[in-house]
Length: 383
Ligand code: ATP
Ligand code: MG
Image (cartoon, rainbow, N blue to C red; front, side, top):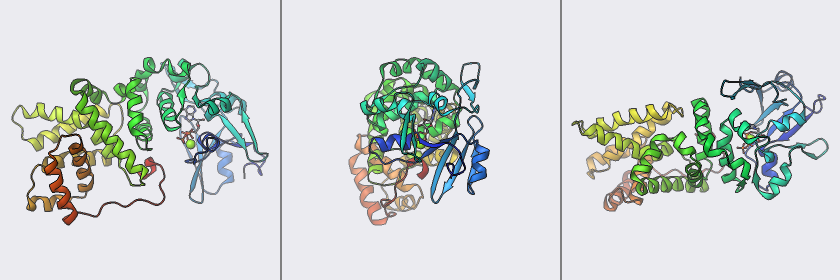
């Protein structure tokens, strides 16, 4: 439709990249010389979004297509620290290529003539499986520190290597993520952990010092309690990756429960030393841990409330008495809490006989386990 109206328009980004890699694209991004307002004029179902980066969402059947106008990338508004706070200066397609993040994300497919335009050597990098930031890495990370996370995400997801100059500044610049709005980091973190490769992503984040910035408390506990924490987290993320591979639903609440469990226990133990009972201590500890975590990553209440329930129920699993168990299995969060308890049993934190008792009990009295979904989209949408 953009072509028919006389505009330039190409597919770009993940859709083109994934097709060239022989992978199933998650979605398609379009870029055009039409302004967002002109795009809106052409499509019946279209919504303009974003302030920092204004673009159009076009809905076609069940697809949502992101349509961005070519950016010049020049004179984008920057904060005092050199972060881009607004980039709505329109330009040509060649300029647009320069302001994209990685070379393999800057390939333009024109459906009108079937050509692929490559202004930055993206095709070579794609064939060699190299994630290479376009332009000066230090500057590009500083402009938008989220690119640090995107580099790791694409390396893991696409099984690629970071180019040496793209890799070099990551550790040093990791603290820049602190300047990124907490809500944007929530989206990015969910993309990191909910797309089926959470366990290896976690290791990479740890390796590059990004975990320490994103999950400070977790990193502290990893330093203090070492192996046990590492094992619980890696196993938890691995279990969640397996669920995704089987088409089973996962919830961000479970991931936060896994990542922050040792922290909440640590704080709860401290609170209990002044005589506070286990349940209130856990809830108070959850408040503290969430408060600290949300300075970095916004934790929407619908997630944190469930994470809290998962944690609180761990205390109830200690008692294997039919009457109390009957109440617990009816709890709407029972399934997630039970899975979390099994994870703890897997790493030796819960007695196997206790775990087995609950497995038998819930098989007879519990809710039915969730069944695989036929159409598995991204974890983030599922959330
Ligand atoms: P995914 O498979 O996760 O959708 P994607 O590459 O399509 O991967 P999107 O977030 O959908 O990622 O972004 C679409 C395109 O927009 C990217 O391929 C890239 O060209 C550009 N882009 C996205 N985020 C940034 C950024 N922070 N800086 C520069 N360019 C970006
Ligand atoms: Mg995309």
